Amino acid sequence: MQNITEQFEQGYYPVKALLLYRSKLETRSFYLEAFDIEKKTGKPINAHPLAENELTMLSKALLTKEKKQQDYLMPKELLPANVLSLNTQSGVVLWYTPAQEQSLFFKDSLTIPCGKAQVPALVWKASKCGLQLFALSDDRKPDIKTALYYAPFFNTAKSGNVCMGTVQVGITESSSLEEFIGAWETAFFNSYFSHLNDQHQPVKGNIIQLWQSLMDSGKPFPIGLLTTSLLTIQQLL
Figure 1 (cartoon, helix red, strand yellow):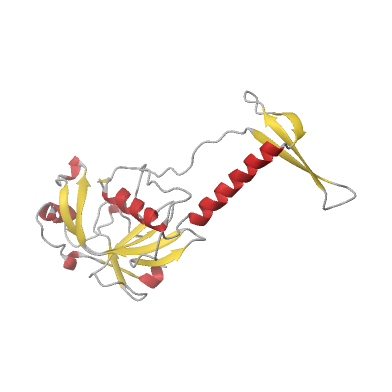
Figure 2: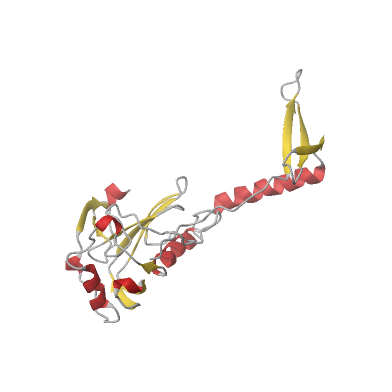
């Protein structure tokens, strides 16, 4: 993978400030004053009572943001069968994918041809800010006691953390659960593998020779070459 980092933030500049006054006599009585922001200096100017059109604009902005937050990580229909855990408060999703053929991309320095190869079943744990990836020994839906193996890829650390460098994963404040999962899988498999993290050896034997032998061969991934992480699903949670 390229050395890439996600960018979820966008720039904003101040256009208006609000100042809330409370009555000295009646603590439940308030007055709202609005200020425009001078573009060059950034200083508040033109103090005036909050106008109806300004209040409408503010209300719409707040409702839109609340709607986006409500939609974030919500499934479009039924909860996908491959989702193992979903925490909308922390924004963390745990899911698995069966063994499958995937297009893989490698930097020229690895001397591994880009192409298609079989990859093992995988367990993914992701938030907006990062991804952990592990492998499974078979395609059965994992339970809380299922043992996890290191994902047999470059750019992955012993902790399971994946170095995503500067890629834009494409997750927004209103991304559905399906969009969130799809964005992470696409970002991972569509970027270039480039290096071993902290000299972590994720497979038994030579990882370069392993992928050289698998690319465009149609051969199933050799599960016997996976190395155990000593973790279970429960510990990953």
